[in-house]
Each structure stands twice: as C-alpha cells, then as structure tokens.
Amino acid sequence: MTFNVLISDPLSEEGIQPLRESENFTIVMETNLSPEELGNRIGEFDALLVRSQTQVTRELIHKATNLKIIGRAGVGVDNIDLEAATENGIIVVNAPNGNTNSAAEHTMAMIMALSRNIPQAFHALKNRQWDRKKYVGVEIKNKTLGIVGLGRIGVEVAARAKGQRMNVIAYDPFLTEEKAEQLGIGYGTLEEVLKKADFITVHTPLMKETRHMINAHAFEIMKSGVQIINCARGGIIDENALYDAIVSGKVAGAALDVFEEEPFVDHKLLELEQVVATPHLGASTIEAQEIVAIDVSHDVIRFLNGDVVKNPVNLPSVPSEIMYKIEPYFHLAEKLGTFLIDLTNEVAEEVYITYSGDLSEIEVAPLTRNTVKGILKRYLGSHVNDVNALYLADKKGITVKESKTSSTKGFTNLITVEIKSKSGRRKVAGTLLNGFGPRLVKVDDYSVDVTPKGHMVVIQHTDQPGVIGRMGSTIAKHHINIATMQVDRSDVGGNAIMILTIDKHLETEALEELKSLDEIKDVTAIDL
Ligand SMILES: NC(=O)c1ccc[n+]([C@@H]2O[C@H](COP(=O)([O-])OP(=O)(O)OC[C@H]3O[C@@H](n4cnc5c(N)ncnc54)[C@H](O)[C@@H]3O)[C@@H](O)[C@H]2O)c1
Ligand SMILES: O=C(O)[C@H](O)COP(=O)(O)O
Image 1 (cartoon, rainbow, N blue to C red):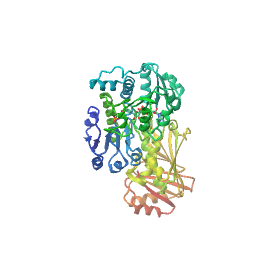
Image 2: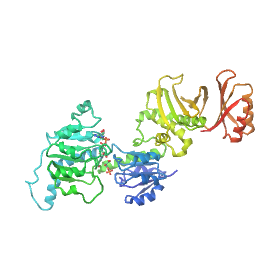
Image 3: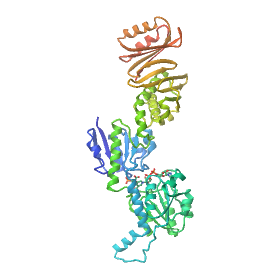
Image 4: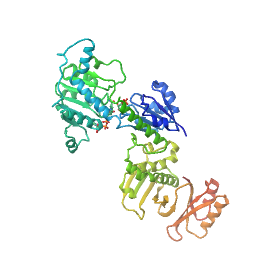
C-alpha cells in the first residue's frame, strides 16, 4: 500500500529523509498553496505535515476524506482544529522536544536585544547615526525575570537567566515549591510574578485559558518600566493593551517573536521604537528544524505502518515501557468488544470494562479505547478508530466505565467487558495465555476456552441428550465444517451454551434452521 503525504509548510529537507527513504510513501511538498488550493487537493492525501503557517481548519478537515494523520513539525497546535480532527478519527502528532533549545536561546537573545537596544541602535547606525546617548540600556544582572509558564522552554529560559545572574520567579499552575527549589528559582501566583518582575516572559500554550492572560489589568499591576517578552504565541498578550501600556510609559519595551495575526506586513506595535520584533523565528534554526521534521516523519511512518506513535496530541501519550506491556492485549480487547456487541444484538447503553491481575497495575486507557472501538465497529464500520472511539461513544450516549481489581479469578490477567442494553446485561471475559494468545474464557457465567477469531456460532440451549448431535448434523447439512466446540452448562438439565468455531460464515438459512431445533433458545453467528 502506498501513502500520499502532503507537506504544506517549509520543512527541513534533511528532516524528511526518513519519509523519502520509505518505499511506500509518496511525498508532495507544496508550501505556497492558498486555503482554496489546499482544500481542493487535501482529499488525495493520507498524511499532512505542517508548521505553524498552514491553518488546518474544520472546513479543511471535512474535505480531507483520506487523511489519517496530521504531523506538526513543532510544538504549538493552535493552528489545527483538534476537535474536528478527533471527531474525524485523524490523529495529530507533534514534535514537542526538538525546538525547545532554539526557542529558549531566542528568548535570551530577545531579552538581551531589548535590554541593550541592539536592534534600534543597529538600525540607527545603518542610517548613519552614531548615537551613544540615546541607546543607553540596563543590565539584566540582579534584575528579576518573571516566567509565566514553566514547561520545557520556561525551564530552559530559567536556567539561562540564572546563568546571567538574574533572579528568576515563575508562575505555572503545575509548579510546586519542591520543583521551584530544585530549579533554584522563586515561585508565586500570576499576580505576584507580574508585580515583582523587571522582565516578564511568557511560555504557555495559546488556549482559551491563556488568551489575553496578559491584559490591561495585568499591565496595571506590573512595575513601572517593566519589559515584556513573547516568544510563545501571539494572543497570550493582548496587543492593544500592550500598545497602550508602552505609549503610557508603564512598559519600557517589548520583544515579540509572535503575533495575534501572522503573517503581516503592517503592525501598529512596530511603529513604537520601544518594540523589537522577529517574524516567528524562535524555532528557526538548522538544528531545531532538522529534529522536529525527523520526529514527525518517524511518527507518520509509524502510524501509517500500524505502529504506536511517540508524540500523539489528541490521544493520551503512554510511556513506551507501558505500551510495550499492554500492546499484546489490543487485539483481545477489540475482539471482546465486537464479540459482546454481536451477542447482545442491541444498542449498548453502558459499557463496563474491568481489568484484573497483571492489568490492574498498569495504565489501560489504550485497551479501553480498543474495546470501545470493537463495539462501535458494528455501528460505524471502519470510521471508528483509536482516536475517535471514546468521542463517538460519548456522542452516541454510551457511558464507558473502567475499573481495576487485583483479584485474578485464577488468571494472571483478565479483561471483563459487560454491556448494559435495553433488555439486560451480558458479559464476556478474555485472557492472554502465555504462548497461546488471546482466549475467550467467559460468556455470561459460562466458562469456555476459545480463540476469539474467525467465524463463530454461539448457541444457547437446554442441557438435554441429543442436542449437540442435532446441532452438528444441521450444520453439516449446510456443508459447514466445525473446527472447535466448547460446551458449558449451569447445572444438569439446565441452561447451557455451546460455542463453535466454523470454517465459513453461517448463512441466515442455516441460522434459522438451528434456531428452530428443539431445546434451542438462541443462536448468534459472529464473524470476528
Ligand atoms: N516562537 C517560536 O517559534 C516557538 C518555538 C517553540 C515553542 N513555542 C511556543 O512556546 C510555548 C511553550 O512551549 P513549551 O514547549 O515550553 O510547552 P510546554 O507544554 O512544555 O509548557 C507550557 C507550560 O505552560 C503551562 N501553563 C499552561 N497554562 C498556564 C497558565 N494559564 N498559566 C501559566 N502557565 C500555564 C503548562 O503547565 C506548561 O508547564 C508554546 O506556546 C509553543 O507553541 C514557540
Ligand atoms: O510552536 C512551535 O513549535 C513554534 O512556534 C514554531 O513554529 P514554526 O514551526 O512555524 O516555526
């Protein structure tokens, strides 16, 4: 199978070598497409690789009928409609680590440029003005740097600022006293940081909660003469409020790499001499671009070849050592879901999944997604996948509950799935037998031992002499070979179950004939 990959923003040629070298990938690099042109072409592609420029909107995603993965060669995914991608089962991956160093270095360069008026002085000199008085700066040593958002880049900036003998204080909702102590920095609320800092640099993602978090009120409580740096995202700082604060003299200067609208040619902030700016260059180094492109290329290759990705954005990321432990259960989980929904033969209202034994001690969210995928496949076909399974279950009003128990019931690991539907509850359980693979070991309260695979028939009947024989000859009459048979009963002469694996699909005629036999209560044909 060949996969078509569209690269719509400039990516490092060295970085996309893994894709170019993969035999089953066709790469198209078109970095100047208008939104309309992109919309017209996107339907041809299985993967889309972008930086921050391409706007991956809901409208574009609706046109992307073959798209399976969006790779963001960088950190910020605010140019991608994640909700629309998730709804449509498209996985989004990014490259969160590759440009951290470059962004931190750029932030330090901006702090230095700002404090010593380097761009302004250079500009004057280019205009043949030798002015030493006008461009007197301030030292950053012993000044307080306030960092808002202490993630990957924030931490790197803190380390570099300490090296420059700055006092560092940070605000991040996840920053604890111990962590701050470990990093040798101070910490406080947002308000405390804004009030104490001489320089303020923001390093949060742009989200609903952080949009305009640095606004007119924030500028009001800052020190007079404060300097502002934004190498994260335009929109975290309210640009109109920043403009007013600079004009009023409250803010002495600002260094901006990112803007609310990008790209632009005219911006009112650039009319102010106190503003220094770069056109979103934080990640633009040879090193960073190569790493981020390599990272997303590898994830695209992994995903399209059916492997687990390293940096999913719209799926919880599971550490590789845990993924290694649970991956063998994916198939079992999905098959249990499909088997049970076929047996239930009604719309599921609630799904309960219990993980026992070995599985009770590890992260099992990917198994839950696989089980739900197995169930929803029967309603939605191949449209459902790991990315949208839980979203679609929620949209269909199906409650999914997950629990764990250390009780093993004799198995080293056990997944029990129960579905509540209009007419009651049904359940199945399965285990992964070392050396034998997935096994179905419980159907309702009956014990069985069947590989959940291929064509199966579940027959519920009364435990009476001759039933099994009649069943066998009816199936034989339809030229179907029985491969395996499992029988269990509640008590002698009571309710019983028979699970057959057969060599081909049980057609309706044979199914109806089986149902009409004496002592038969129900027959379900299941194809896994
Ligand atoms: N200019 C560039 O070219 C460039 C390059 C790389 C990254 N970035 C941007 O830099 C930003 C940070 O990237 P990162 O890799 O450090 O991300 P990160 O996810 O490692 O860190 C973000 C931090 O922000 C914190 N945060 C979230 N909400 C917050 C809030 N309301 N107040 C305070 N802190 C909050 C998070 O807890 C987290 O620690 C992102 O916006 C990213 O897109 C820009
Ligand atoms: O979020 C990021 O990774 C940076 O803003 C870099 O964006 P870019 O890939 O467009 O340079």
